[in-house]
Length: 346
Image (tube, rainbow, N blue to C red; front, side, top):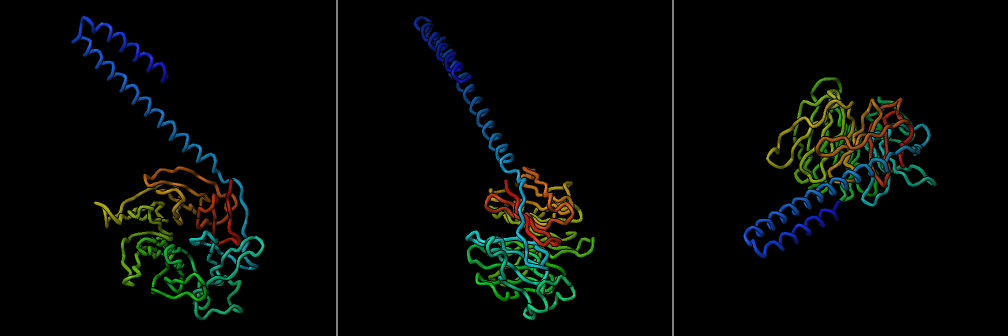
């Protein structure tokens, strides 16, 4: 098609130029017209080719990453509840929260999971290891969500009983930064500023949940947004302009603007796709993975609220999906009800 257009335009121009010997003014107008038609034709072809390339890339991304194979990273005996999964800046992990109050780190198939950190100063291994008794929570702790500051390598933790905590890259007992919450259910650290975004969930189907910001420089917590229903974890966009927040009970995702003309305001971002639990940034800039709890799905979405990919999490069909974390061409899936982390690959 391209060569025919060029041929027609060149021949037409040559024909017009021959007539210019006797009809100069007329020929100049025709030459301009032919050049104009040629330019319009080439722009149309270029736009069409560009759109085809974009569509092929999108389709290739979807079909080459269907995540149909699932392997399990099994927790130590009697240990359950890996609700969160995180990777450090070296790509090591996953680090997972578990029901007995520990944060464990995966060290590979030859070693498995090992102790990395814990949240309660009163915790003992004899009493707490392997327990899932909530009545022991004030003694053993119950970490729920994790997020690294990739500048400092600090790991930030939300705990159902001890609030917001942080631990260094060597692990051990975490330091409490802020407490007195109903239930801190999710967290995301924006590494450029160090700000920590977290959700204080409503434990009943009311609308008392909040999106909070912890500023490590001032050590102050600010309420950014209220009126959320249910538990879930937020995610800051890769350009740091907004935060996506699950509105679990209402089956919505809210967007809170951090910058720009809408800064300090929130809006409904997505609706009618299930119960969003936790949101994590995807590897691709501007994209996210949403753990849809009851439907056992992982949704890859973009900043325009488009669903780019739906991954059925078949190994979790009878459980509540807690998190979908992308790393190294795989999806790491956690749940409060399993004794393993699912790893979905192609």
